[in-house]
Image (cartoon, rainbow, N blue to C red):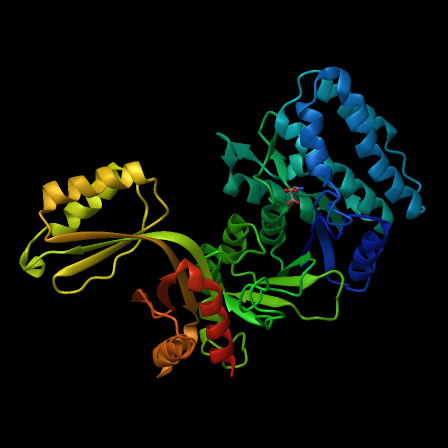
Length: 437
Ligand code: ASP
């Protein structure tokens, strides 16, 4: 049994929704479906969720016009799908509530509510409202209670469509996740029904080996482990909402990223490392799974003679960073040197922190280098393969790129290099070409 989630572009218009229907009806296992609100039909379009945010913010007298725009999106969909579904009462209720003090979360989540009603009618599945199965307490998801009520309710139905993006408190107050949160709803549903796989249908063929804005048409990653994904996502690669991974990862359910507009492509499978190691899943042997990075880090290069003999030197450094709320990303050390790679920090804060380092730690030199880009080269294959590092460094030196810092995680899951911001795109291209040769 599968859980499927369709994103905003898949639900954007009657055409794409017909493709969604075909995908579901062609798969006997496709029993539980979570949907986003209609997204953009073309790049200049406005997502229904953004229209709903406008509806919430608009003064009372302007709300009816915004509601009309939302209504016409759905009317166009139901008309072109030839669907016998009258949503008039829902539109009236949303406008009424939005004009009479409804919460932000209630208003912005109505796109998913309506979208799920449309799809449920189209494919003749039961509509199960997310406020029945996803429980929030103290402002956050109550994962265990949700698991309990969601399994019971969902499994009482043979097949259902559920709106993404929201749930409710025990007293019925609607609570929404952060933007893109339907991915989390899909993961919750997958866990609740004990799905064999969580298919996340979007508008790309899967995770790419590197950023397609830098390298044209990079390869799709056929299979990635949750740990690799975490490294790649942290460094900027994104297809899924970060929190969507936890419910399914904990339950050992793989995620399959698929493309509604190219349903034959297999997409990317996200699996547990243990399942890859045990042979439950196999992938083509590749040392490097993906390359991702981010610009604008700051390096604080510190030197102090006999640093290696001084107990507590690093502890003091880290305390100072903590005092100034500066987040540490990496900390490669030499014998008498240590480099703190920190996220972009205002000059005034950095100056004060450096003054403290000078006062409390008494270093010989402290040098600040701004404008560093970090690039992570990620893959479990590195653990057992010789020569990956030399390959990385050769690709960069052949492209005439100076490496400012090197850090290999102790898990040997990644190698991280820092280069100048200006070399970032060139470095990603060189690494991609070098490693895939
Ligand atoms: N519709 C919401 C958004 O635009 C949630 C989602 O699509 O996942 O962020």
